[in-house]
Amino acid sequence: MRIVKSRGIGNERGATLVMVLMVFTVLTVLGLGLLGVAVSNTKLSTVDREYQATYYIAEAGMTKRFSEIQEWIQNNKNAGDLTVELLEEKTLPANTFEKHFNDTPTATVKVEKIDDENYKIVSVGQIGKRSRTVEKEFKVNWGSSSGGGGSFPVDMAVYTNEDIIMSGSATITGDAGTNSIKSNSVELNGKPVITGNLYVPHQAVDIALKKPNDVNINVVGRATTMLKLPQFPSFPEFDPLDSKEVVKSDSERYYVIQNHDLRIDSYLTDGYTLELTKNVAFNEIIVQSNYSLNIDTNGQDRSMVVDYLNIKNGHINILGGGSLTLYVKKSIELGSSSSINNGGIVHDLRIYLKGDNEGKELMMSGDQRIFGFVYAESADFQITGSAGLKGYLLTAGDEVKISGGTYSPSFIFAPNAEVDLNGGAQIVGAIISNSFKGTGGTEVTYQKTDLDFLSGDEDENTGGDLIVPAPQKETTN
Image 1: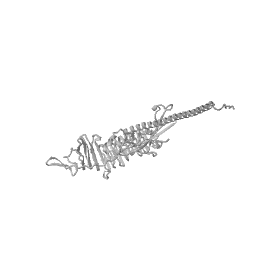
Image 2: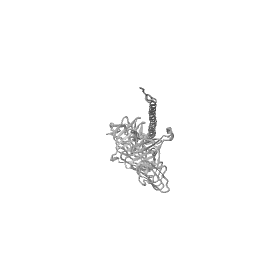
Image 3: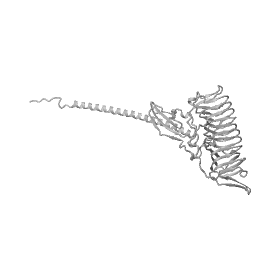
Image 4: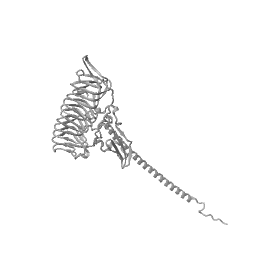
C-alpha cells in the first residue's frame, strides 16, 4: 500500500514570516507610542519651565518695586501717604530680564491703596501668552519711627484737610495742597500767588480751584495725605524740691523755692540759677519784673512738671548743654516782653501744655519770644505784634491766629484748626492745618525743617515697626 505525503504538512516557512511581521508591527506601535510619550514629556517640561519662569518674573517685579517703596518710606516717615509716582502702574524695562527662547519676559507692577495705612502690590509676570500674578499687602505706620504715629505731607509750604482761601497779595512760596474733594476748595481773590504746584485729589483736579482769569496756578492730582498729630505724652510724676533761701545779708533774704513754688519775683532772685541734677516738680513757676531764671541742665536731658508757668514779665534761659522738657498741667501765661530760651537752640526746649480749661488759649504779643517745641493738647493760639516763635507749634486746638511779625523757621501743625494769617505775617517753614486763610501781604515761604525732632525719646514710640508686610501669595488671573 502506498502512502502519499501532503505538501503543506511540515512547511513552516510561511508561519515564520507572519510572526516576523506581527513582531515588527508590535515594535513599531510601541516605538511610536514611546516617541509620543517622549514628545509629550518634552512639551510638558517646556510648559512647566515657562510656568515656573513666569512666576519668578512676577516675583522679581514684586521684590524690586517693594524695595523701592521701602527705601522711599524710610526717607519720608512722616509723609502720611505714598506719592502718585509710587502708586502708578509700571512695567519693568525690557532689558531687565533675559529672553526666554524667543519671548521677552515682562513684569507689570501696580500699587493699590486700601486705606490710610494699608497698601497692596500686584505684580503680573508674563512670557509669551502665559502669565502669573503675585500680590503682597503691607501696612505703613506713618511716623512710627518719628514719634507716636504722627503723619503729614513733606515738602509743602501749606497743606490742609479742607479750604485754602487767599486774598489781596497773599503769597505761598512753594507747593500747596489740600485733601478736599469739594468744588472751589481753593479760592483765590485779588492777586494772590502760589509759586509751586497746587496738589489736590485726583477727582478734584478740574473743580478744586476758583481764581481770577489772570492768575495762573498749576493744579496737579495726587493721593490724599492723612493729617495726624504725634501722640500727646502722658505726664510723668516727680518729687518737688525742698525749700531754698537766697541770702544776701542778714536783712536781705528770700525763699526762691517755697511751698513747691519757684519764685523769681524779687531782686534777690534775679538771675538765679536752678541746678537740675534730677527731674523735679513745682506747683507754680513765677518770673516777673523783667527778672531772669537760669536753668542749668548739667549736660543732661532734664524734665520739669509744673501746674502753672507764669512769666508775667521775665525770661527763662537754658544753660548747661542739655535739653529741658516742661510738662505744664494748667496754663502758660506770657506777659510784656517775656521769653523762654530766647536765642537758644530750638531742640533744647520742649513744652507740653495739657488740655485744661485754664489753658484753652495761649497768647503771645509784644516782644515775647519762644525758641523751641510747643505742643498743646487742645489750646488755641493767638500770636500778634512782633512776638516771635521759632521752632515747632503743634496743637489739636481749633484756631491759630497770627498777625504781623516774621517767624523763621517755624513748623505749624494744627490739623483741627483754621490757621489765619493777617497783618503782613511772614512764616518761613510750613503750615499744616485743617484750613488756611491768608490775607493782605502775608506770606508763607517753604523751608525744609528737621522733622526728626518730632520723634522724642525712643521709649515714647508706640507706633511699632514702620513697615509691616504680609506674606506674598499668588492669585489667579
